[in-house]
Length: 192
Image (cartoon, rainbow, N blue to C red):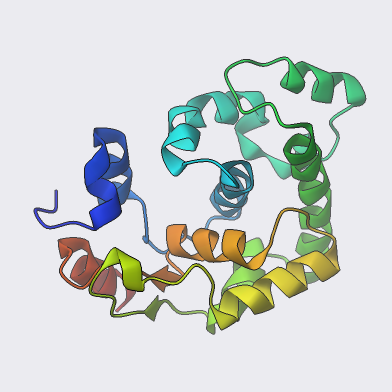
């Protein structure tokens, strides 16, 4: 476990664990990428810690983030999700998740891989930034703006540039660990 870590991760054990084990690690599994994108959708307007606390419940409620299953959700299934007290019950975000699963299946027909489609926005490699403090880290980037525009054109919902950038950070498309964080160099080593 890192001794020196990013400022945002020291506020709770849950955030610290996420920071130390997942955040910024390059992700290439289509289902996990869809999970991260979905969780970032639900995080919009809320704290990441709230989403992490409900992550297991989301996994169960959304069939392990399987886009084939989610794409076929009926109005009854959506209503049951709206009644599920263990998840964030936002109708727009739940409907967006079903929509996004359907759009993802279309992307898979064209690209054969959600991974390959998403990573094109960083030229299929991690961008290693060199931030010294949390206040230097931007909330968007040109790459996130391009990803957002492309995803919206495909039909995705809740994929503004800020959500896309948070997703890129989480999925290791950008290394936004602070340079003093011990995970910064570990992520660089993972991408060599």
